[in-house]
Length: 235
Image (cartoon, rainbow, N blue to C red; front, side, top):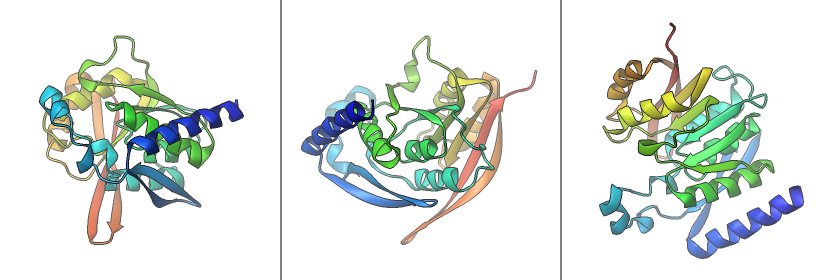
């Protein structure tokens, strides 16, 4: 399994490096340091055709502060979620796979999802190099989730509330994917849709509480990342 998985990842990585201008960002995750491969510039990937079709923009290609903060928190402090212990986790909007790698290191069985197939490929490559585990990748459009989408013990997302329509879309996606007794985790730097998201959750049967506040500092960038915990409402 390991040899065949390694060969599969090698082929996938070679394909990505032929098609993209790839750079690697070194990221400390607790005691480990990983090298995250991702496109050098999200702007280079903007497609007018994709935007006209469904306003699609390649946000996935940019490692965002919320993903850095949440990834580091997952591997350094288990007070938020507890040790993974093999629990099944879905990431909504995996990007290049930073949070998926951290969650895998923390012991979760991770399924990465994204609207872009290329994001799934980068995530699988990066998680493999960081953990030597081959994760599942699933293409998901939150606006049209499959009828039989599975439910997970933990559903996690970082910086996904960047447009107001995503308030209800993300709330519905969480309601469709969180298992009974499970938890959703949304890391957010204060995006415009966050208040509307909090208001939308009760309408789909979910309670929202703000948990930890995670600092992010990198160069001139200073942000405080709010971590929201989403659970099924009692009764």
